[in-house]
Image 1: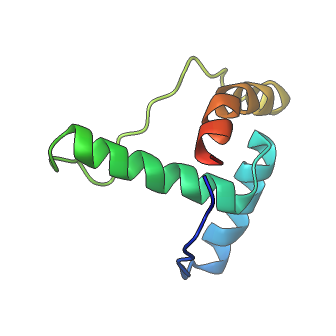
Image 2: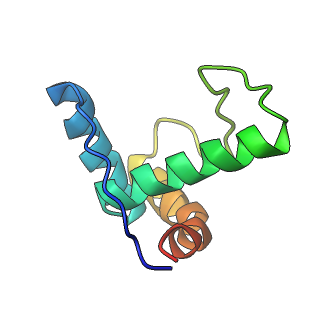
Length: 89
């Protein structure tokens, strides 16, 4: 699907840096990660009839312990691949 609208968002410098680092680890651009998050939020809002818990309660998918950063990055990329394709439609 063609992206037709832009939405400027102001972020603290530290948050923007972390977003870029995490997105890079997942094999995404920061814009793609934000699109995924926004789409997920809208879909969850619709699915729950507007009854959301904020901030979100993030869940992991069997990610390894914090002691293995290279393995963790690989798992994040694998988990993000289907979402990245979905988010970039």
